[in-house]
View 1 (cartoon, one colour):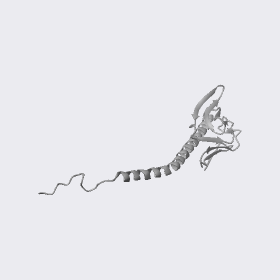
View 2: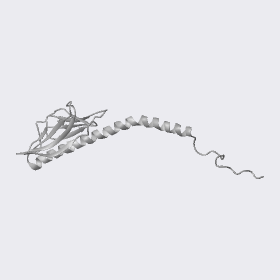
View 3: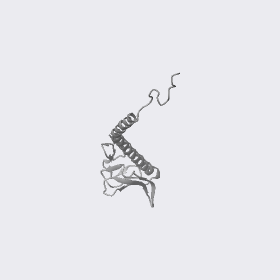
View 4: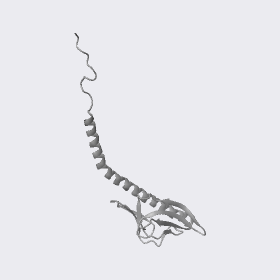
Length: 160
């Protein structure tokens, strides 16, 4: 009698058992949970820097608008309830009639821009800041240390 043919069910074992697969998935889950907090902090840092870059862009826009239009331009800040973070800001041309040139809302709950002076930043008709004495804007958050400083001559310095 010839030997029986090998059956796929009785053949040599190939692949992984259910226990091995579950163990590998468990290890991957533990590693992902360890990496998630550092990834979250990195994303918050990127959002904070992006908000500060947008603020710097709009600050430059307000100054150039004052020079080009030959009129006074204000960067008005709106505060979140509690008053520690900027919720939004507007670039306003203050001529005979006020005109909003740009309005920017910050990412709610994720980014906190703060400043050492709650008054609007005003540029005169020559593009120079009016009544500014070492104005600073910074990102508040977990270990974020980016700061913009506006001098009396309108120069912006970035401090990290």
